[in-house]
Amino acid sequence: MENPMDPKMKTVDFDFYYGSAQALKGVNLDIRENRITALIGPSGCGKSTLLRSLNRMNDIIPSARVRGQVLLDGQDIYAPSTDVVRLRKRVGMVFQQPNPFPKSIFENVAYGPRVLGLNHSLEDTVERSLRAAALWDEVKDDLGRSALALSGGQQQRLCIARMLAIEPEVILMDEPCSALDPISTQQIEDLMVALKERYTIAIVTHNMQQAARVSDWTGFLLLGELIEYGRTSEIFSRPQDERTEAYVMGRFG
Amino acid sequence: MRMASPRVTQRIAWSLTWASAGVVVLALGVIVGYVVIKGAGAIDWEFLSTSPKGGLSGEGGVLSAIVGTVYIVALTVAIAAPLGIGAGIYLVEYARESWFTRLVRSGVEVLAGVPSIIFGLFGFALFVVALKLSFSILSGALALACLVLPTIIRTTEEALRAVPQSYREASMACGATKFQTIRKIALPAALPGILTAIILAVGRSVEETAVLYVTMGGSAAMPRSFLSGGRTLALHTYFLAMETRAMGKALGTALLLIVLIMLINGLIRFVSRRYMARMYGGR
Image (cartoon, rainbow over all chains, first blue to last red):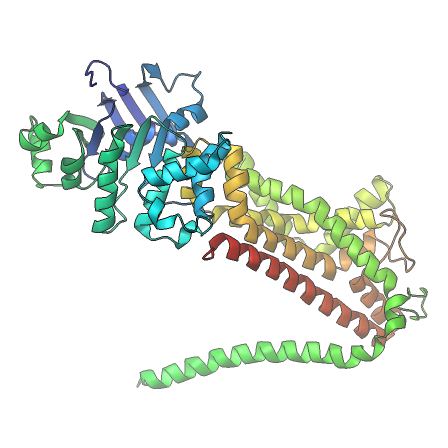
């Protein structure tokens, strides 16, 4: 059930800096459970930075600094007591470029469970994850094949399977279709809609049609600020802010 | 002035590059051919199975030098590889840019350009004299380890930097720790490059003479332990050629050296190709 008072994730007055450059300014975003939230905006608006702040992927960048809070089930993930490994197990991520490891299909999907020490019934986990990512039928005959021998679309679904194998609660997708052809894009979009029954999804996309097709909620960012946030149907049909309107009408970006 | 036609310039460029390649192949052919023709006659079972008599006679075979080479190479790699690979991992995976990493990096650069005899004199002063290890295989291997360390560090660094950052991100996003990411993703992907670093170190250990001349001594006797003195094939070649003037045997030893290096390169290339095929191939 949707409870607008209690989103799965929430950013509170969230600021993000790369060195002295401020990339996000006071962002207050809700990510609702079992819904797809799309983040849209022109290049450099901070949408990827925002997404990567939700599983602390930006920790890798030496000069990164944050202020404000990001809540997951009400807990601040930037609190000093946070176990980042545990956070990333709960908040999985799929990247812009399909990035399977140079290992077999099986080993790719088994990687997360292995590093997390969830070794029991690994074969079941791999099969379940590949089925959930709609890839099982294409690869079941030879799971020992190198993942790099798959097509781009298959690789991206493999990356989704790899992420599902760690049984996350939230799925972050950073322009997951930008490197894919239209048919593969269609498959990934269908997959997202199927996955939201069980997962909470946030997606960054450059493609406004995609945001309109798959998402329930949309946030529009510009120059590091969340300009407008609302139901996707509202954002695309009756935007409140003229900058949102200009962007969704394709007048810039 | 009239420019030559594109057809003519093409021909000239082709001829010049072909000639350069030809000269290289020719030089290599002449050197190897000379060593084979002059040296092959010296090699027989007795040459391989007896140790040099020592002194200035030039008599005897090369057995203790083969054993000395194996000891030196094994010990040098055993000392230098863990240190060099560890330092390379630190520089790429852990260190944030700071005065310390810049210092380490420029130190590595400088060391890579230092003539080998200086490593020899340093090894002599520190290991042979100060640490009282005397002229020994251990002193030689320690000095040689200092010499090959920069190469191993730099090659490991390059190999790790060539591993796409996206692999590391994917691993972290799966909940892996930094150490798991290095051990299970970055190092395996960089392994062919790291093997190259080790090949280079092995090659350098096999061919080096100056460092070993002043740290290992050059005893012709069969080494009994790492604390014995000894000589490698390269050092033995030098002694034969310059001190005893037994040129036939020197070239025979040189031929063994060439064969040994080709075998080592072939073996490691074979291993790394099989590994690459497993990682990136159809299966």
